[in-house]
Image 1 (cartoon, one colour):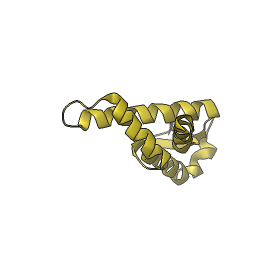
Image 2 (image 1 turned 45 degrees about the vertical axis):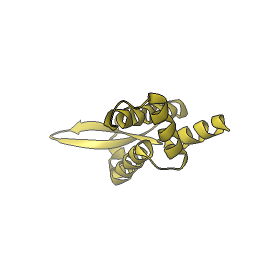
Image 3 (image 1 turned 90 degrees about the horizontal axis):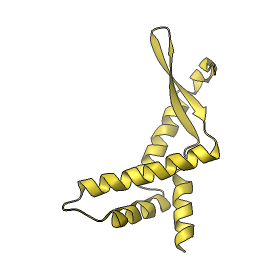
Image 4 (image 1 turned 45 degrees about the horizontal axis):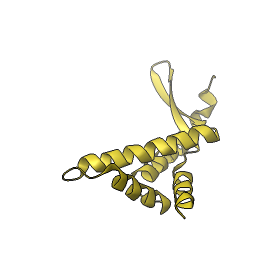
Length: 106
């Protein structure tokens, strides 16, 4: 089912946290911040579309955007691809900087 594949692909790329930069004195602290479900869905969709555009631009000749988007959705469904990699990088950065959560002032 196509709808199931698209929904699962977006679900697999949803980030739970985002990284915000705070300046404390001369240091820049990376502070993880939780995302609400709507924000995480927006990030996932945006990352999938950006990965498809990047794939289209890197292809020899002009590959149709529909084909690139379909390929990215299938990779995201399989928990692979650029969007999923980006999510994993953000989560790793959030875990590395979780000690800075106390520096949140908002």
